[in-house]
Image (tube, rainbow, N blue to C red; front, side, top):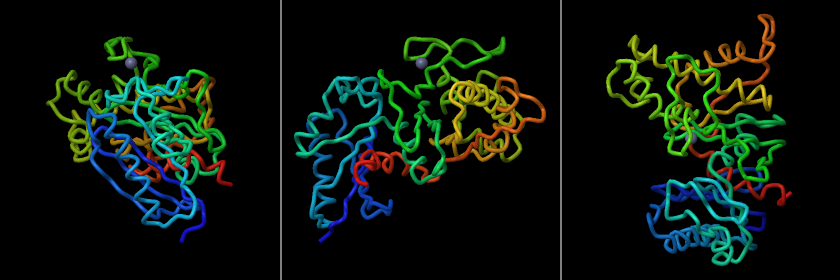
Length: 310
Ligand SMILES: [Zn+2]
């Protein structure tokens, strides 16, 4: 029989529901992955409930675990999900319905906020007062953790950097239309599809971002040039973040965060873009890949109740 507090985190992805149970020290005690019941809201609630009850039964907990959920999209003040690519969740009161199904309070945060919380708690930003965490993947999202707590803001928008415009654009950088209704968003340049589009627009082959990165590492000149343009844009977009927030650590997650050369090249380019940058000024902000990799989203979801467990 387990008497210590158990923290369950669930990451709601488009294709899978991933669940994890952590003890108070962050040790992983249990993990499960099931397919997301795509398109079926009620079945999604039932699947999440089965995961929570399964963990509690297998770990024989004495008191109910805390439950945190990482969701796509963002949350309205009324607790409704919007802008999720898992569109059957949009406009649904997921938090209220889960609290009823699980008979306990439930906390929700979007996946980028979960990344920031996970990495600030015991990952690449552990101990840092301010952590900015960005997901560079199919889309681009970001979150901010201050003293290992998610900064949300009254609109729930803190960290929505992916839909700010790419700053200091060059004449050959078109203002691309974005699905969000605006033009020139960071996501259009720094997502995987954004890199692939840019490579093709520069005369390259139709390749995915991971293929471009692999070919660049093998010495392909065109792919190297694409990565250099990507690094320069990432540096500009992050310089705007540093000028505004001046975080101690910037953590990168998502598929493109696995490109190792970013960590050597982007800080140098970024330092040059900062306000009042001088040749002798070293940038103190550290750029690091997520320490927990793909598990950061689900770990951050579990940590949404961490302050209350102390
Ligand atoms: Zn946009």
